[in-house]
Image (tube, rainbow, N blue to C red; front, side, top):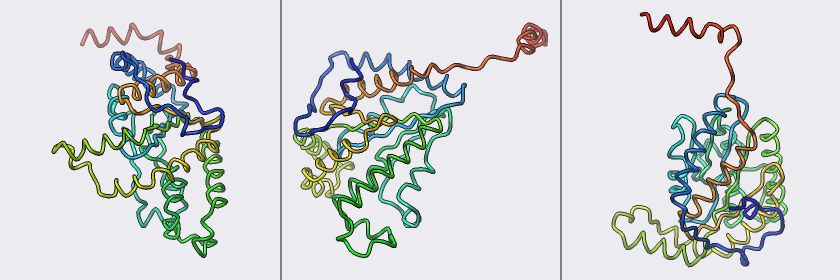
Length: 284
């Protein structure tokens, strides 16, 4: 697997992108990667210099929840913090659009996972610009002002936000789960056909599906404008869930290995006394 094949480094055209890649050994490979990821997080925590922010974006049914469960299941539970961002609360709307994401960032040594991210502010709000009026921005007087220039400015502010984070030791890994419209249809029908999956279905899913083309256009634009050297996007073919999970895990492991995290050693004075400490305990 070549990690570079998935990194967004040139112009993205979603209509020409591949959403269906199947790796026959995906589940076996993922099991190995989970162990490596656990060891990397353990070393990163001990070193205490870096933290990781994993950003997951994708259309409804893209598989974000199950990916989080399967990729991070072997990592120490205290080492992973997951935030699923929903519609902003009244309190969150009283702050700037990045505030609720900033306060949810992981501590050094931990992996933070944003299930839907700060990019919702240039996706959902771009498809539904009327939502921006609820933010009570002083310089926005009418819906006409919520235009392309408004969202380009937000994307640049997001780039600056991420640039600041990386300068402070945050390793940002952004994944777009690239799902086909046909596969989304299949997954929505599955939610309707299987009683145990009914609870996942919402009528709103069908309403948003009607806006598929608008969302694809917005995703394409943000991928082209916000994939930076400090915080690149990775486009993951998401029609096959086991493959998508394995590719994401492989990219995370590959990137974290570059940092060569090292657990600190004990001071020389303590090392000299290790045998003495062992004897004290053994002779209790």
